[in-house]
Image (cartoon, rainbow, N blue to C red; front, side):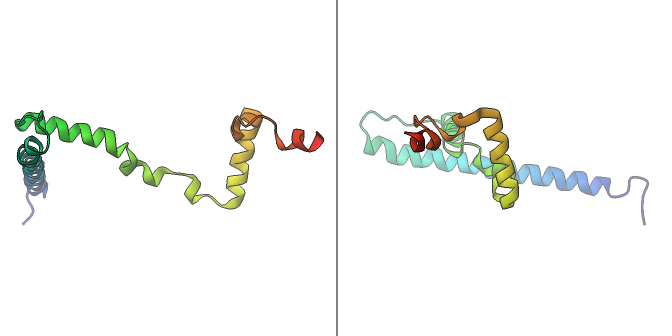
Length: 117
C-alpha cells in the first residue's frame, strides 16, 4: 500500500541512521587517536603531555589537512592520464604558445641556441 508520502519516511530514517553511524565512527577514531597518543607519546618523549578528546580531534584534522593534500578527491580529475597522444601534443602546443620557452623550465639556453653555437 502506497501512502501519500511514498518512500520519503524510509529515506529520512536511512539518512539519520547513516549519519548516526558516521558520527559514531568518527568519534571512535578520535577516541583511538587520543588513547594512542596518551599511551605512547608521554613515554617516548619527555616533554609530551597527555591530550584531551578535542585536542585529539584537532590533531586528526591537522594531519588530514597536512598529509592528504587533497589527493583523494581530485585523482579522477587529472586530465593528462585520460588524454590520447594527439590531445597531449595539442595541450603542449597550447602551453608553448601561451608561455613560450618558459614552460620548459629555466635551464638557460634552449636546444636551438645550443645548436647554433
